[in-house]
Length: 222
Image (cartoon, rainbow, N blue to C red):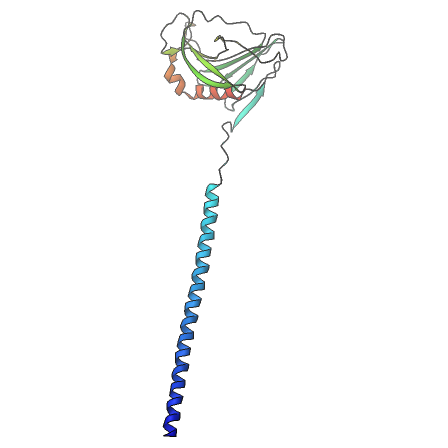
């Protein structure tokens, strides 16, 4: 009976040991998996956080004048940007800046500053307008018809307007001359008979010549 009792006690002990081993192994496996899950979750969250941070960093705005050249007039020291594939001619006088730029399509930008005589627009009709920023201030571009023409669906010239809506404007200071007048215009050339070429206002506004003219005007510094 003592032997049987001893064997029973030993069996119970072995069973307890086996149960303890199984339980310990199970706990170890569960604990290891739990720690692994935590590490994976932490890594995922960190990666997501980095991705979110990258996505919220604002890209620097593109330079609208990338690839453009800069020119400064000799008299009034007016600086402006223009496409590098445009040809520039400077025929300035001692009292007047005279600069022209051609884009090769027949359109020409004329810039005059200093002692600029006033233009008579009484024979032309205002066909259209567009708002622009000139020297940091709101201004206006005026589309003019050919002299004597009243069809306002076409224009032969686009000028930067003064506050009086004339072709010449006064510079904000006297600059380098006694007469600080300024005129900038986009012209489309002449017909064989010498009359100005007119184009549809809508066609003008959609052309690269006009869009670059607007950018040139808004780049002017004085």
